Each structure stands twice: as C-alpha cells, then as structure tokens.
Length: 568
Image (cartoon, rainbow, N blue to C red; front, side):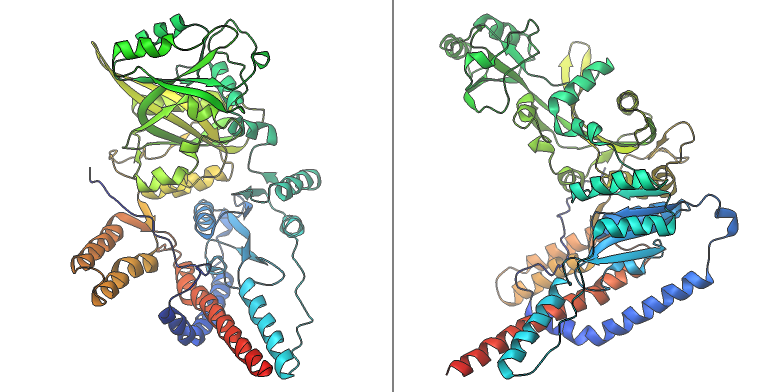
C-alpha cells in the first residue's frame, strides 16, 4: 500500500489578519467579473430548476429534508448524498456577506436560506460604518438608518419546516445547543417533521465516561472498556504487575482526596474516588530494574483507607466506527483503523469524565493526517465491531435515530499460540462526522448513505467498502482545497526562492506535494456532477469578501488621514 503524507490544507479565509497585497489587488480587479459570474450562475440554476424537473415516478419516494449546521464542505457533502438518494434538500446557513455562500449554486440543494452572521455581514457592516464615519468628517450625509433586523434562527427553521412541509431535519452540528433544543421541542409538538439525532439522555453517553462504561458492561460483549483498578495494598500492586505482558507499563496514582470521600467496594474495578480531584502522586511501573520497583512500592502508603488507582497503559492502533442508527438498528456501517499506534490508558478517560478523552478530541487529525485505512467489512475484526455496534444501538432508548461514532484501541500481544488481538472501547459520540460520506465517496456508495440518512432501512446494514468488486485495502482519500494547495505548494515556494529565502529544492518539493494531492486526494468542494459551488467559492465569494476587506482597510486609512488634517 502506498503511504501518503498530506498536510492539512487550509483555504484562504477572510479572517486571516492580513491578506497579501497582490490578492487584494487581484480580487478588486476581478470584482466586476465576479458580479457577472454570480448573476449568470444564479440565472442558470433557476432555468435549470425550471426546465429539468425530476421525473414524476420518483416524486412519491422523495423526502423533503432540512440540513443545518456544519461548515460549507460538510453541508455540501450531506446535500449531495441525500440528493443522490432522490431526496429534496433544503439548507439554512449563515453567510459572512449577503448572497455569498457557494451553497446557493449547488444543484443538490433545492432551496438555500442564508442568514447574516450579525445585523449585517461583517464586511458590509464595517464598510457602511466607515462610510458613515467618513461622511461625518467631511459633512456628507449617508443614510444607513435602514438596518436589516437580526434574523432569528429558530423562527427561520420553524417557518421553513411549516411552509415546505419538511419530512426530516438533520442538524449536522449543534453549535447553538440551547437554540437547537428549543427548536427540536417545538418542531416535535407542532409538526410531523422527524429530527435526526439522539435525545439529551442518549448524549450523556458521550459526555460521561462512567455512564459509557456501564452501558458497555451491560452488553456482555467480548469488547470491554479500559477501566482503572483500585489497589488497597502493596501486595495487590505486585500481583497485578506480575500479570501484565512483558514490556507493558502501568501508572499508579493517588488522588488528593480525604479518606471520607472514598467509598469502599469489594470489586477492585469499581472505584468511587472523585475524578474531579487532582492527582497527588503518580508513578510509572515497573521501574527499570526489579529492585527499583520493589523499593518504590515499599515506600508508598497504600491501605483500604488510602487506596490508589492503577491504570494499564496500552500500545495500540486507534479504530473508529461510524454507523447510522435508524430505530435502534444499524443501517449503515463502516470501520477504519489508523496505521500508527498510540499509547493509551484509562488515565486519559478519568482526567475528563464529562467530555471526550483528549487523545480523541480531534477525530479528523488521525482520519486525515494519518491516512486511515478502511477495515475489510468481511474480516473478523470488522464483524466483531459490527456486532458490538448493533448491541450498543439496541440498548439505547427506544426509537433512537442518530449517527453513532465509537472509538476503540486495537492491541496486539505475542503468545505461544501466536499474535492475540484485543479490542478496547474508549468512548463514543453522536456527531454527524464526515467519515461515512468519505468512505461512500471512495467506494461509490454515496446513494446508499444518502438513503440511510433519509431513514431508509431495508433490513441488513449497508457495509461501506463491501461492493461487487473485489475489496482493495486502500487509504481513505485526504481532502484538499485546489486554490489553497496551489498557493502554498506552487506560488509561495517560487516567491521564497526568488527572494533567496529558500533553496531551489523547495520548488521541486512543493510541486511533488501538489501533484501527490491531485493524484491521491479529493478536492473538498469540486464534484463533476455539481461543479458550480467550487466556481462560486473561488470566483465569486473570495473576490467579494477580499474586496470588502480591502475597501474597509482603504477607508480606514482615509479616515485617519482626514482626522489628522482636521486636527492640524
């Protein structure tokens, strides 16, 4: 298998502190063309919608689905998957500048409702404010009294659901949690629209590690949680150390808690020490030599009144499972594994019982940078993970519809009988992560995923990467932004070489990285069946926003100059 090393490419966004001068000049020059392109694309999409309507035979099965939250890339991927399955997609999202979102031009989106990120888009507000300030200095009146009112997200969602008779609402990310919860409650009471996502009780599993561990233990599955062991004597420490495989380590730690807060329990794996307390002492065992280990343990005060926690440190590869759960049944399933091993212990979990473990906070870090490898769905490991996901889903509250993301550590140890693999569950969440759609794109199963998101269930789960063709062990394609990667890997190296800030080799390296991404990656916005959002993003949105920033900056300079002249 070919190993790819893609660096994460960040698009050029307006929020950068200082955009390059050449970019400002270029965008100002392209502004008339951007206006023309925006007008032409808008007319084209309206004509296309009017002339090329979907066949009536599909109209019965089409659902009207509202998508909110997330960034442009995730919303667009979701809309394309749903549209491929025959659904009609509506989107509500914020725009930094009026009518600037590339989502407006997508063929996969039937209707887009853009909300300003403030009273007005930030750049337009700044420009109007600057003009008003400039007018007050040189005695010219600018009428900006007619301000656009702050659009209420909740009201917009409810109005759209009612007017378009939505069948399903998919909130990709719940950034405004309270607003989304209010919306869900009102939508449930006043419409027949279903909401894709778990209820607050289910979400506690992702925030409370103890609750997650209890849920896993009730499944009575071979996959278990990694839990710390409470030790109440030095003899227990030595007994546990004698059982661990050669080369494995443990972490012995004592919480700074008064004895009154420790509740005795006969089960050593049930610990009642508050995990909010800081660690008073921590040691890694075994020590380099046996004598050092005995000497260290002998000097510790360990008793039933002053117990310690012992964490096993595992060396293994992260495994991620994503499954669409429809009415407590797994509808779509995929599993991927990182090629790189990490060290992990139950101490990672106990440090933050109210949230995800720090090692797993950014799931995309290892999904993209480490080039995860899909697990063969017919393999024993994938089948075990599928069985676990199905049991996990069945134990959730009745009628749960959600995307379930489970995290594991796969360890391997050598025995006399060969290599033994063990899977440990480390956590879960219910965010609509991009892994399912990424896998679907890789194996041409977008339509199946779109149907599953639309709550279509036909019995057995769809196993992504299991198709009619022979399974190939390949990496999930990393995403990149074409203009951004061209700027960073082609333009910048040439400039640095011309300025004698880098050797000529930098150009060759940049070209190699650029070609590698083009050949083995996927452009984050471009799609051959839906190319307009890519054109809109780079030929309309970027010139609009960059020009507004440039005008704002120029007006600021002029205001400061006029102020100085007035004082002089």
